[in-house]
Image (cartoon, rainbow, N blue to C red; front, side, top):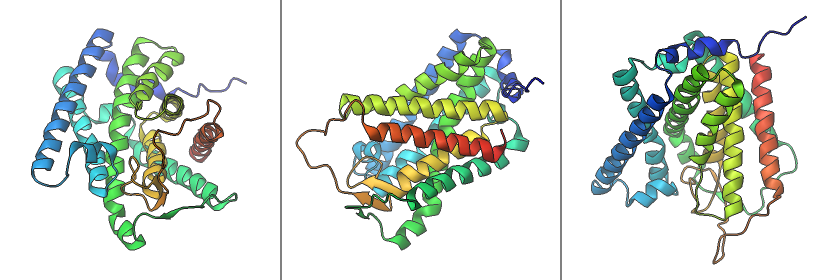
Length: 300
């Protein structure tokens, strides 16, 4: 008995992109979207700096303070706005043409978020417990009061990235190249490169780029299996809630909303990462377990 093609829902998901499949057009629109986003981001940060909301652009880019990280996360709404304005003007497409099946969007988002969050919670509650040197970054009551705003900001951020990479780019490449290897790999190469930092050691940066590529593959796979961005957004949200709201390094990047903080690295140079760093492989395994848990929960 032949098994059904697991990516069958992907065809309907990509249908809105069939009207304009040209790669040159896609590249031009992508450049336009990024340019509008960067200009709007610069203007927004400048206005907030002049208003005294943030002290500098570095406060936003590093996210080491609560207000800096919130501004950084909410600023991804500018990326979503740029994407939607350009696609509306150039292709006549709206938000739902990127989100996919509306009947699956919210149920898949909820299930994926809960499944991913449950797995991450289990990992923290089960031994071994690695809490040495950790201290509270925020009073628990303040952290709870900020939680609705923090979750909203993270939802804005992950939704923008999913709309662009697993929505627009994946759809456009899929209608041009039916081979899944193309539309699974190429958008996520760009997604991974967008996560290159260049501020730490080279091996650590490469590990992060490779991890981001693997994350993107998992999100693209969930999108193709379900026919909507719901599962990918839920998956992305669970991961970023765990990474941004629970753990951080004191005065480190994106630590401004973290409940728990580890001691800062104290050295005159960034600590070199080993090429075969076990933590990298553990993070990949955890990512794979999240993907599998979500697939099981979605029965996909």
